[in-house]
Image 1 (cartoon, rainbow, N blue to C red):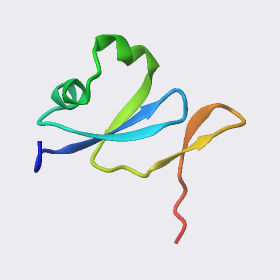
Image 2 (cartoon, one colour):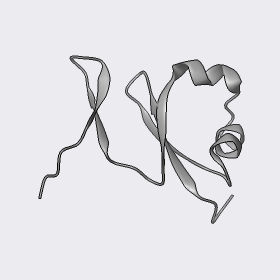
Image 3 (cartoon, one colour):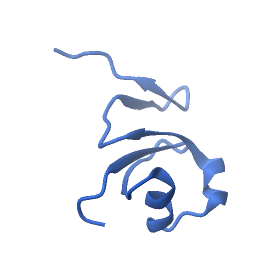
Length: 68
């Protein structure tokens, strides 16, 4: 719902997705995901997170280093 907190989902496929809800559970449910989807989820973060990037060679997420 509008105004609810955002969560960033990082999938094992290298996809990144923003969902909204009062909690991560509610956000995933509102996005149409059931408990079965958890097996394809690598991890999640609070907010519209950009702290990780997909490494296609290793097929895993890695922390983005400070680029300033």
